[in-house]
Each structure stands twice: as C-alpha cells, then as structure tokens.
Length: 559
Image (cartoon, rainbow, N blue to C red):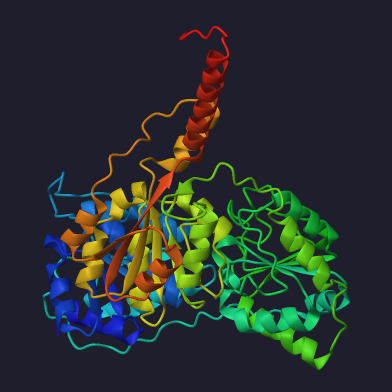
C-alpha cells in the first residue's frame, strides 16, 4: 500500500468525508490516492477558496474540515483561510506538502519556512517524516483540532507518496474530553440568582436543546453573540437579540442581572461588541473549554474550564433534581428589552432596493426570511451587506447564520456556503455577499455547479466597496478607491452554468420560487445609495424653490 493510500484510509477511519484543495506537482501522489478512495475531493478555483470551503464544512458539521495544498504558493494562498479558522475557533486540518529541502543546494523551488509562518496561525504543526506513522500523526492532529478551543492544525507531508509504505495500521483518535470539574458552587449560584442572564457564544452551540429547556424552566433571558445566533430561535420569548443593536441597552440589561453566565464565549472583538460591552465582574461567571480565554478580556468572579454542552446538561440535571423557583424576570420585561435593543437604530443611512415596494432593506430581508425554511443557513461575507443582514435577518435555528467573525475576510461567503452544503446536504444554504466579495470568489459558482449542489447565491450590487465608502465619506467627505466596475452578472451566471434572477417586483414570490429551485441560482439585488437619493431629493427641492421664486419676479442668479 502506498503512503497516499494509507493517508486516505486513515482519514476515512477518522470519519472524514470530504477533502478540499487543488492538485499540483508536489501532491500528485496524494490526488491519485484520493481518486481511489471513498473521500469526496472538491477542487476549488484557488487554495483560498478551498480553505474557506473547509471552514464552512467544519462550522456546519462540527467536524474538522480537511484542506490539501501544495507547499509554496498553494500554502500561501491558504493562509487567510487558516487565520479565519484560528480567530473564529474553527477546527481545520491542513495537509500541506513539505517545502523542498534537498541536500547541498540553497534557493530551492518554492522553498519557504512554512513552520515559522504557520506557528502563530495554527495550534500545532506536525511533520510526517515516516509514512509508517501516518495513522498516529493524523489521529493526533485530528483530535487536536477539536480539543479545548477548536482551531486549525497543520500536517506537513512528503511529496513522494507513491512509494510502498507497508500495511496500514488501525487509527485511534486520542480522546478529546475536557476536564469535568466540580460544579456545585456554580449550581448554587444559579439556583440563588433572582435575575440571571445567559450570554452564549459559539462554544455553546452543541447544547441548543438543553439550553432551551434550561431557559424555559428557569425563565432566563438569553443573549447570543453573532457566531451563536439561532442557538435558540430569535422569535423565542426569552431570547433578546442584540447583534448590531444598542450596546448601551445591552449594558443596561446586564446591570439589571444579578448573575451573568457567559458560556462558550471568549469575548473577542465581535463577541464583546467592539469591547464596548460592560459586564460587572462581581456578577460575571465565565465557562469555556479553553483555559486561555478565561478571564482574558473581562474579570469575573468565577472562572470554570469545562466543556460547555456538558456543563449545560449538568446544570439542567441539577435543576430537575433540586428544583428552584423561576427567576423574577417577566415576559413583559423581556418584550420591552427586545424593543429597546433596536429602539435607537437609524435606518436612514441604509440603501434602497430597486424593484421592491417599499424599497427598503427591511422589506428584502423579510422576503428572504420568508423564502428560506426556519432550519436553514445564511452565509455572509464581509462588508455592508453583513451589517444589514445582522440587523434585519432573524435567525431561527442553530447554525442558521455563518460569517467571518473576527478576521472579516472578504471572499468568504460563497466558498464557505459550498463547504456547508457539502457537509450538510440536508441543510438549505444561501450565500449573501456584496459585489466586492463576488469579485474575489465569484467564480466558485463553477465549483458549485460542478459539484451539482443546490445553492442560492445573492449578490448586493451597489457598485462600491460600500462599507468602506461610507467610512471614507464620514471621516473625509470624499471616497477614493471604492468604486467598482461590475460585470454582467447574468452573463457570469450563464457562463458558469448557473441560473440567474434579478430581483424585481413581487420579491417575496420571486424569492420563494427561486430559493426552492434546483441547482445553483445567482440572484442580483440592485441597491441605490440612500445618501445619493437624499442629495437628489434636496437638489430637486431647491430647483422647485428657485422656479417658484423666478415665477414671482424674484431675481435668481445661475451662479
């Protein structure tokens, strides 16, 4: 059995179903082994897109996404995807060729110090020096992806995988069970709390059903970070959705609580609302599977290293064994906080949507939400559309929103949606991206069509890098370098073999029909800038005033 065959067999035994990547001179042996394996090999248009696909697969399934690249340019193209996985706590296994290191020669082809580059971007770099150890190395790397705080792990493999490597060995993944600490103190705190508040992050997503039961039995309001939205449906009476809402109101809610239980949230920039979140240390309890994040950004009265789903089940069992009174929160109070979350939101800056009546972003997202099943996933890119979606799109199921949270890499949405759809073929998936993000990864439509996926891709076309343009205008009153010359999106879709729809009147009916359709569909949504619209309205108003003055004999100068 060749080294490549043993490697693929080991991946199969670990439960890997798909490998994302590109073939090259240094990994032809691996791709020959993949051809003969049971693994689904998904070839993207670039290693960057393949890395984002592995991200999407991992987030949708909870299992490591596997990425295969050559060293040199394939490796460097993939780095942004590794960085996204690191900052967003996503398990990703990167199988990369070892750089050339022939004896007696310097300046080898594509030779980089990959280990040094990888060191701050992955949890560990494994070197597969002996193909007889391939099963043990892959098992350890796979387990490390999932242990503690999930993240990326790299395995450097030799380029010669065609050679005989001997008979295969059994694969035994190392156990990944985190510590099971004494939780009696925490149980007492929760039982005694009169106004507890749950603040949950991505690490709690494996306990959605148990959290729902705990929230309903104790009447505990729940706030989720952007990465955990949908862990309970956002129309649930005890969920207070604050993403892209008023941080001041959230801080006021936290001030009212006598216990704030933070579960699986490392309080990163996004998880802490740009670090504007204020949590009283004396009432904060933080629980996470990684000791490195405990107390990193916020002081707390109690820190606990534990697997969050296990802890939620433990707390739920404790409430059944020793029932305590429901909290003092009332549904009327929570309804009021739900209103206050967005009471100060100003929608005047939002662009308008051509073809809708009324032509508002809120109308569009209401139509999109109605067209998508509750148990579905909307994958976002980085940009203005993300801000709008996070404000207006209700998330109704666990894993219902996927976004590049703490790296905010453009080009993420379409390939990540492909990875999610491959990992969860039962899950309806739609990608929403701006025209700038489409310019970076839009040709992954080819990959989606080749893989025969059912996928909806929505592109907001406003002709700009919209979010940056608004920032430039706000700070400098001028925009520069943010105008786009967009392609013919219908022609692009046709060339890639995808269906095309341009949003028009009757949006809800159009979207429902299109989203439910077969194959890959590209939906173009044309936006009008609200600022430009207001400027035109002002100019028209001034022109009418001048005409009125002129008709009544007042001197009006053309200057």
